[in-house]
Length: 314
Ligand code: 13P
Ligand code: SF4
Image (cartoon, rainbow, N blue to C red; front, side, top):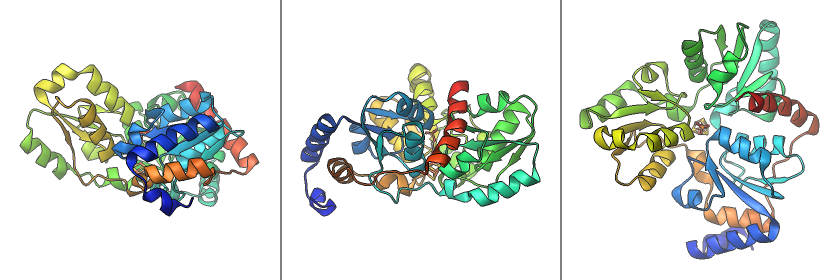
């Protein structure tokens, strides 16, 4: 069957096919918090980049279908060279990861020979391979602190780099990449949301700009946000919460906590490539074992060192 044939199947039929194919082939669906709600509902594991990397490390299956973007699927492959990792739509790329390439990083390393290279997991395997250690939004502060007072070349997210600098006082040279979704959140979005919900708390993802983060009550990863809301339900019932991240996570929170006043910082915060994954594409790529992620083995091994070093820290 071709992809177009899967597009004409009902949601119930697609779900059934996915469950059957998973059993038959020993496959799991690892799903990021920004995926659409119907994809999230099909997840064996749902989480942030750190949780997904940890899950990919211990997964007991022959096939991983990664419902997220390219760097996440690549990370799963870096950790599981002997497993088949499938990405339902190969166009699902993170634009931030494309804001640095191996050649430019090589040049920067010559310019700052003393610096440790800390690379956000939102990067290609080639860039990870040239880095000393990776980090995610969930452990960036811990990773930076683990490096003592060494100078750090932090790639590719300038906002996460500046956040780490402000939190740790480390000597950080930020790369000039950014996430277009989070970088588009402005103080004016918060002012509008606060005008409607004046008592609401504001929780923000560290990919947001510094001036937005300065107004946040809590700064954390997507799963950190889920954990915070789960732990503070009484407070949020009382005050409400404005959530500064991509809409898929906000929708997940609204579904899981229907009685809590949860508001998006902006409904326009949509990561287009995260939405490329659909149930028909999942069923198609799993049944046909197509869209496999393949990496050059020497790059994979070098990238593995940087990812593994991160996972050993936090
Ligand atoms: P998390 O690791 O916090 O889920 O973030 C991933 C991401 O791509 C944020 O834009
Ligand atoms: Fe990349 Fe931003 Fe999309 Fe996350 S939300 S995958 S950083 S573009």
